[in-house]
Image (cartoon, rainbow over all chains, first blue to last red; front, side):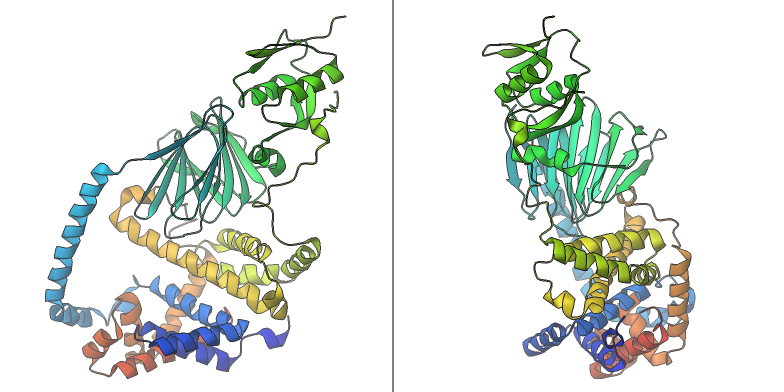
Length: 327
Length: 194
């Protein structure tokens, strides 16, 4: 580490002065500008100032300490007495706000976004977050107070969360919830299984345990994911590495098969279309398939099956039948 | 297993641009080298500043890394890498402390809310954190009484400077001076943590 980069005492002293000045909440516009300029001048200025904020916050976590607060109660009483009338005003205002909030709550509804089979939709939410719905999916959104609550009721969605530590972003999936700060992640609900994959930031999955208490199931970093049973989250994969390209392929209208069982691959393909592909007999169900296909492009997939497995294709407007090779 | 060759399979898949990091390979190598160099020191630094200890420090470290990777312009980072990395980490620590404080407040008023908070290792926090807090407490106890009162009234009671000035019969200018003195004292006493 280069010594020149360590914050020296005079920078620290200047940061302390600025911090004390800022806490006065009485800075003039010119002073605010000067502080801004000082911070922009040098990375060490910014570090020293951040550390003041940090020390100050740390000290607040000592507020329960008896030894430290011993000399404060009398002061507190004196101040309260002086401020009594202001307090009553504040209480009255709070009551009004509470009543207004309760009235609002009655009318607060959940906004739903949904897609049909083969459709996708991008939704820009009011806080700057974006959500992208995959085929046949439904997501509810309710932003209220310090909570951003969403519900993935069906299908799959990708969430890009605008960072706001004061308003946790929580996606509820059946009985579990996925919490994020500034993050991007994908959740899919398929046949009773929930799959979460993280592309950015840190994501926390919590679920109700058998005893009914909410517990952290896993905490994940980019490139990690988890799969669990929606009805019984205890039955889960633990944190596993995820192929992000595979998980996010749908956002560019592609399906990514990586040594998939043909039966599973066709089920995946069928999510995106009403013209279902049907595997006839079980000769081919355990065959393995790898490749990238466009969603809804039955011809390309059928062609590939014909070429690789000698499968026979019988298609009409309603469905595509895949028959095993005649031998 | 039959490796399929379909027409569609010939297309190269690309990670959608919004998910991919904005940096090139050379920049990424530079950032990775930086992290290799500072990883341990930042991790120790953060662990002493947050109740969650090394577990929480790892999350901060990870987030710092992601933030730096997402930088559009690496120039400020190249100019003073250590200060830059520590600032990003410090700001994340600050956010983390605010979260802990809110959680503490929520636990008093709203049981339901506390169900949603990630579990801390223990309400007291890690050993490193306890040690830092004790160090801070001792530092505060060593302050001149009037300086300590000003600082604690501002921090614990959320009193404004004019309120503190009135309660102690001093000027608001003195309140500010005492605040600054308290901060300098903490910086010096907790020097090894910073």
